[in-house]
Image 1 (cartoon, one colour):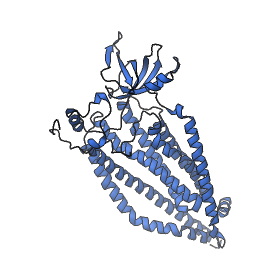
Image 2 (cartoon, rainbow over the protein chains, first blue to last red; image 1 turned 120 degrees about the vertical axis):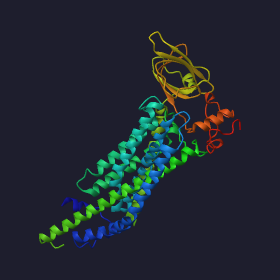
Image 3 (tube, rainbow over the protein chains, first blue to last red; image 1 turned 135 degrees about the vertical axis):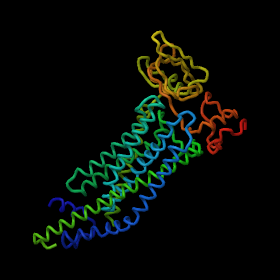
Image 4 (cartoon, rainbow over the protein chains, first blue to last red; image 1 turned 60 degrees about the vertical axis):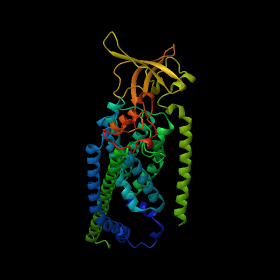
Length: 270
Length: 171
């Protein structure tokens, strides 16, 4: 079992007096068990809050809020596009934090969460690119340009996809998690580039309206529904990632139990 | 403990190195990352006549002349300005919906020997202003803003303005 050996050599300091593989699994999943109980109580609240806030935000933004004086109704694409862009960047920052936890503290839950986060992050970034493209055609006159903002977001999308693929490319999940964490941390240099590309270089994409030092360049009747949508999408994002992580923890548990039972049936002391 | 600290130090050092390398690379490629040149940039270091580049700026107020070519295709002449410098641009084709006086545009084309610019593509550039039509109308009626002259007034003067159609006209 090369995988097990690999894991033993990269284990934490507290691995010295480990009696056997079965005991090790139990020890290892003690903490995730607490995670499952805690998040189990949180999940219904999170789903409920996400649906209520997002429903209200989308109604406010897509129906009740005013049009823009020159974009007309097309401005409503922003109520999806901007939250997706914020989540793409914020989510990636979260992935980098999980990667630091994984590399320094060898936290197994950070590995699992990172693994379950990246496909959702890739989906969010793809939606950001798609909605931006749909807005760009009528407003700019083009679906796509290779300016610094659009190109750096495309790179962010590839980083998400690359992380999702890389952590799944190893037979030993822990090696996959380490490699993915290194990729995620190398890729973090792209996040400030995405954010400040519109300030550092001439771009076709407009500069920030909301997150700037002086007053937001957005009327409050457009700004508040945008913030509501952003909060709603963020809650939904958190709920989806947490639900995926819980499923992954349970999957690992089931596998560990099956392994233990198989060992017992074969007469290996467990 | 020491092993965690060592990993932390390695990570910090690697991050520092990577950050420095990225910053240096971006500084080195500064000029190549620019999507468009402003008229002042283009005049200061004129690109060779055979090289296509993007020229960006505001459409100068009162400079748009729309004509229809002999083949029935619409064409337009306008000046793109960044304040100190402006360049005359000719373009034949359909202009984007947002194209108007005072709007930011990015045009792709070549500089002709006479100093004018022949564009093969015109893109409108939206600025960071999001304003309901009623608020824009009120600003215009009050004489606080003429969209043909350029950017909207500072956001704090209008971004909480009440949005009534029959608002106070003239302020």
